[in-house]
Image (cartoon, rainbow, N blue to C red):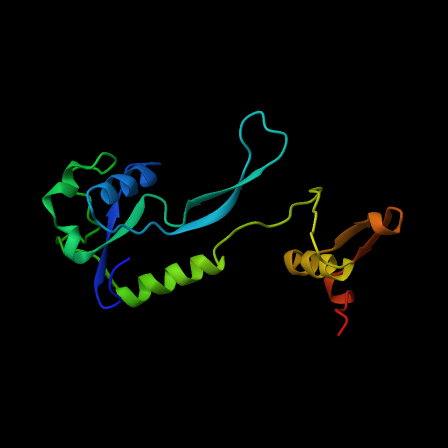
Length: 170
């Protein structure tokens, strides 16, 4: 990704062209960074949703400031011509420190931006966990709403409770 001390600039892309731009910049020997998160996506005609990576900042990606002004960037497909650098009205290029970009990358690798919430009626399968872990998972995603639990372990017993009433065993 580059050096932590370097500043980074943001490139704006055309809609839904982030992955094209990243691959073209990498092909040119540059070092782009596209922050991503995991989200649910249901393809047309698919019976259930799938997990896929999507850009964390749609239509933006980051490059080291030293690479941001190279002339070959203007010819990359998916960029909006000569106005691809995010800048102010006066023409000052937006920059972020390398520490900020590396912190975003660290959080991305830990899954901090992933939006994989459980929706009502969805079937959940947990591998290698106890029934208590399933309750903890449902409580963590439900907030303070009412939770309906259907436990096939106990013959399909259905229960409703508020997360505050569900106590985690020590």
